[in-house]
Image 1 (spheres, one colour):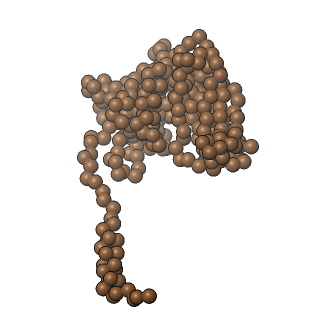
Image 2 (cartoon, rainbow, N blue to C red):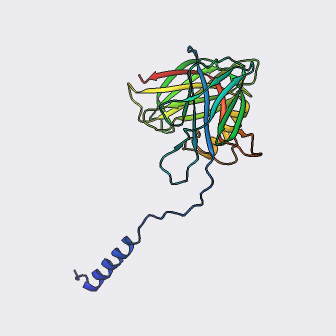
Image 3 (cartoon, rainbow, N blue to C red):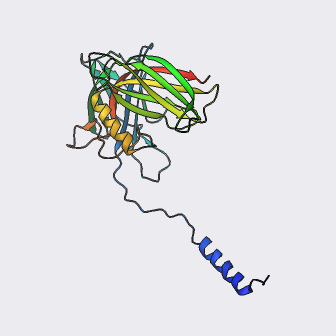
Length: 275
């Protein structure tokens, strides 16, 4: 065997140092827009509860590289009013950015108006509290997924007949920080059994999966469908793509909208234990 020339070894050593020294993290200098108000106004009336305890969260949109949200703890007023003119006040509590109401009156089919005053500007939105059916059954299948070797958990529910319905389904697995959300409509499935599933290979006996079924309005269905397409794998309740416009408008600035959506849903919840 011929020995490797020392010049060749030196040359390889030089290139190794050269290329290893070129690896570095590049941070792009992105333009920073003026922070916008972000509103998480999700009023959920869970079946079997009074629905009197409700929370609205306010924050500001943050730069791309920011690691933490920027809560808004100094809104002058956060209220929700029903069609009879009864006003429910949401007041700040211990968690910055959270505004809590303890006497909310939840009624199916009722129209509600959200009003927020922040930095002298007034934001408003209107929505109706939407009914949802019960989750009739939960099925687990250990042979789920494309390869047939993952745990699949499926909820079953029956569509409410004689009306147009839209639904939001939520699966919270202990192995993913962000829940799996999907939206469905009954355009071709009125009055029949419907389903939604989660597939997670890490689920095992004793794990708990929170399953939620929520009735939603047609405008919110369209908003969520677009949001989920634009932010696949991200949190749709944070700042989203500009073309998914919410319903919370600035009454003082024409054409200005807060990020987020005001909606009210009847909700069925099951904590399913993997068998």
